[in-house]
Image (cartoon, rainbow, N blue to C red):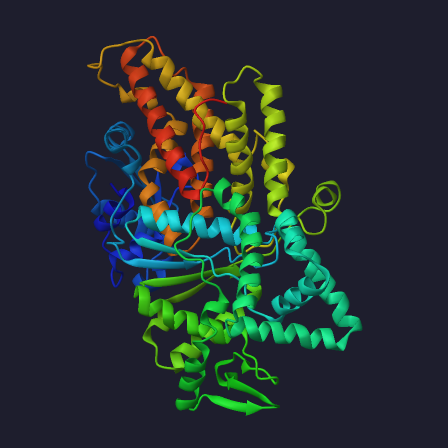
Length: 566
């Protein structure tokens, strides 16, 4: 039950809608001042009264009920106090009955959301810069699925450019397929480096690379065969990362797939009178929209990334008729996407309004020890490997008798990296510190995974008591501030998930489940959960089960798994 919504329905203020009142209602910062507060300062000018008088008058119009214990006016605020026992019993009954579906809705109603994220670059390895696009995309996909949407995950491969012709040229002169077979991605990168060396000293080599790229575009049999081998070597290198994260994609189409669809885009731009010539280039002038000039075709006649994005978006909408299409990339590409969306709008495509650039800040490693550990490239596979290895050492030191240590270390190590990317607001630049992320104390994934395992241990201990199933829970046993904070977080979990979806912000869930973990651990240390009083024990165990359920759901929506024992 959304108690905030119910409270907002009781409040009637001149010229304000229920939605406006709902948005003004906020959870009380100090729990002694109630559970929700309505600041009345906003209404003073309209109602021509002081906030204190408005608050006192509002209190007289609101009746308490079964779940609303008290309404109080304090210094221009109206504070609402929920009935803890009634609310706790309702929230826990719902959670225990529905399990991980306790916060589920079907508001998506099977509408399609297309998600373009991760974007593997052929002939390159995934590095720290891919961490955010991959984890944010995966989490948002899970969140939308939970809300009833059909999600389509696209890995839009970076597989277009003359550099691939250069690699083939270097391979033909300096390499062999045997080396490619034995060395994989390392060989491909070696040929890329070799091609750059040759371009600097040999003009003929540069032309040779262009010729091979043209053959790739024209689907020449030999060029296509070799390029597919380079693609395969790249994917073989990155697939273990996706397997670690349990991520699958519905499509692996790259830029090259749209190479024969760009002429149609250019034709449409011409027909609409949008394409202009400027210094040998073909451009769309977006200066009047404060978006500068978008170059569609370069001086040498080759297309640009934006041209292929236009073709891809048109193709995707024809195929999926999506409700939204999300592009999850760093904020450095803000201008690119703003131009791309505006051009589609000018071409008359209504679906341009359904495109969204979900941007995020830069991520870097801290200077010094950690940075030198991974080198300049900071490869993602090395970071995951190191995280799992360190987790294994920590677990060995803390609990050498633990069963399935390898599995636990893998789950903890991967979770630490994922949460490190999703803990804070995505728009901020961040420093990813693996040593901090692996701590079992503080705001980390291992801390929450340990809280989940602690809940599991308590539940098992209770089950081993073999008490009667007919015991009625006494919810006076969970009347504490810590316990009721847990209840409110669980009760509000559906709104938390919806907010994360609407704002494209997984950290909203991260913060909620971290808050849940902290409050449960406070409760655990302050109160004996398995009590002499069986009815109080029942209430506290029910709270523990609900906490465990919400933690598992929240972590899973972030793309983090749990372990039963740590």
